[in-house]
Amino acid sequence: MKVTLQSLTKKYPSRNKKQPQEVVAVNDLTFEIPDGQLIGLLGPSGCGKSTTLNLLSGLQKPTSGRIFFGDDDVTDLPAENRGVGLVFQNYALYPHLTVKQNITFPLENRKGKDKLTKAQMADMALEAARLVQIEGLMDRKPSELSGGQQQRVAIARALVKMPRILLLDEPLSNLDARLRLQTREEIRRIQRSTGITTVFVTHDQEEAMSISDLIVVMKDGVVQQIGKPQAVYDSPVNLFVAKFLGTPPINVFDGTVRSGKLYIGEEAVLDVPGVADQAVTAAVRPEGFVLSDTGKLTCKLSRVEVMGRDISVVSTHPKSQNVTIRSIIDAENAAHVAAPIVRFDLKPNKVFLFSKDTEERIGF
Ligand code: ADP
Ligand code: MG
Image (cartoon, rainbow, N blue to C red; front, side, top):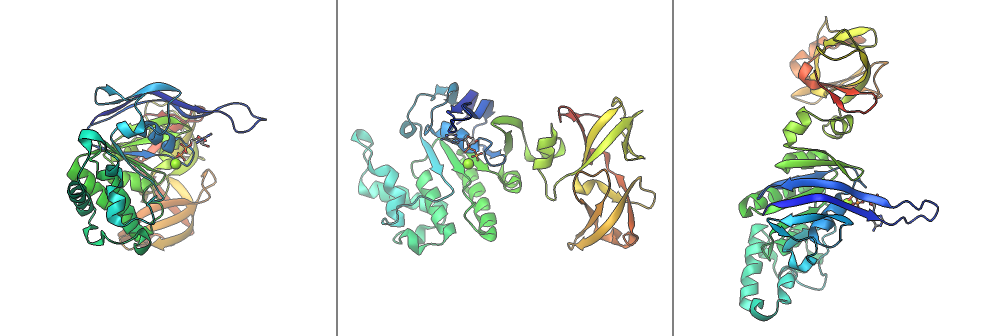
């Protein structure tokens, strides 16, 4: 089911009497979620991710704008009639009910011609439980399950109605690192096998990048960029997006463009043809540095961290906005790193320039 958000805005009244301005949690959101895809809604805490999800689910009403599921305008449709499955960070299971009863709960109050028999409900619960591989735990109580198993029950409960849309709000945040990895792969597998259009909310860029068909990067209630994860990483539209994606994070320098060359300090480090003379913010991905005795960017070596396949060279530069510069270098080149000074060439496709005024990308 394709989902369309059209100029969606949500304002909350101010909670602070001294500052009567309202909070614009979601500001003029317009985008389309293609049928059957998994969208990662990504941004820092407070940027409006949960509000967007709650507007899609119908738990909250927008101040203005419309929401369409397929061709149906669902903006005024109550949550229970939208056919959405919801999963939250805190699994929100009923502690006194068994796994099976928790999963069948959304089916219990169907009335009239939609009413299901006990046997039908048991079949549907078993099918949903199989999808998340907890069919052996049906008679346990939530307190007898691990966090990961509880979250699977919550996902099964969201799937049992065969929702038109699956909405997941930071579903992995309460799990430990290993389970987080495993469960996110499970979610991906389930999404693929059911083909349910899914919105996955997270503040974790790696999580969003690893499972999404498309990511939507938000800041202060406004969409910054939408695209395939790799495309957004390779071509961020502004400094915020460049900084938000990638680990280790992108390295940011104060630079100047003069006569088609990028200067960092006194050194011309890269040709940037066609860029007008100006002060710029220059950002370099960690994998964009190449160790070279004749390299133009001269940094002071702090230390070398061995990471197996790669090494991480940690250095400093007076024009760096980060305390340290982190570059990822092939371990075979590690021999070069001994002197107190390290020199780098820069890979042009790993360097982005941004306007000092607008922080928008400047192409070259
Ligand atoms: P996220 O999920 O990305 O962390 P939210 O959607 O929860 O962000 O919140 C977006 C903004 O709206 C924040 O500034 C938050 O403080 C504000 N907000 C959220 N819910 C309410 C509410 N019920 N009343 C007032 N402000 C709210
Ligand atoms: Mg949230």
